[in-house]
Image (cartoon, rainbow, N blue to C red; front, top):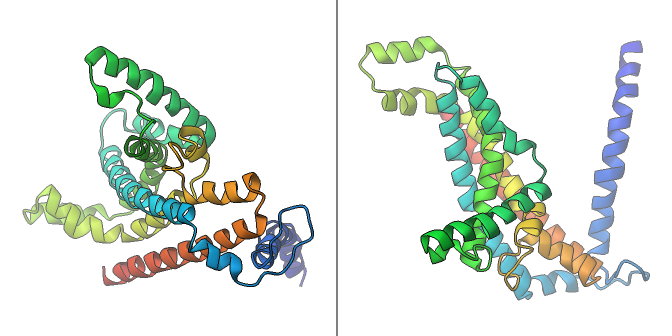
Length: 285
């Protein structure tokens, strides 16, 4: 009985914080999504009109499409780079531990600071190199939609690849070395050993890594703000920024909350589908 009491005592602060910070605002947010609340005046119930407006809002649909494109490219690249780095540093060579630290360090930098650092690199360093080498494509890197898109992808990959690398390292190091040695004795090449042995055994790592990269890419805001601020002409605006601007720039809190609820459902469906599909692969492996 005393043991259960202490469990409740130590769990209570976390449960209370979760309720106050996450669950309660989520419930109120759903309520406000059915109102015309502007953040100041008393809300008036408007039914489903906010949700109907969302699907007729070209700005939101454009931001959603841009976010999907960005997330697909970034997720694929981050996992490829992260797995490649993990394969590199799990080999026995001098300096492997130092390289792990170097690859992981970008993840320790905050998103806003990271965005401003890379904004300087893209606007100043790239322009200087472009001018010196007479390469027009390196100048005004953040001034177009296409280059702004790739700037966001580059920064996201640079920040998250080291974090994903750590996840893959934990699974690669858990593989029984006798399996690799047996495959080598049977004449398997390094590629065959990776594809036939290592890859199926690290599938749980793919489940975790894909979920982490998917959630982080879709909800990205800070780097979008500091790097491009949605420009030019909101063409690189992502959904999180679109929702923020609707709430705090246009003072349409109820409408912004409807966008947030739709976006939450969208991400939840994709995330659960991804976890379900990759988990089945784990069972098959």
